[in-house]
Image (cartoon, rainbow, N blue to C red; front, side):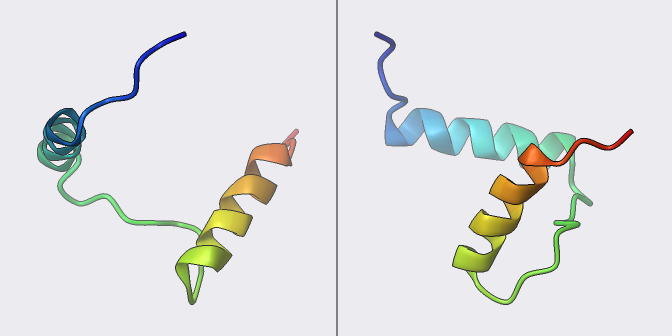
Length: 49
């Protein structure tokens, strides 16, 4: 079983992502974090052909 990342490791990953993709935006429209979570789950089930 793999260990979870520490808070410092998570911060480092986030900083790397922010530097790599400074203009990144969320394409899924949402009005709350819960709605974003559900939209993400549903989009993962979508099969674009």
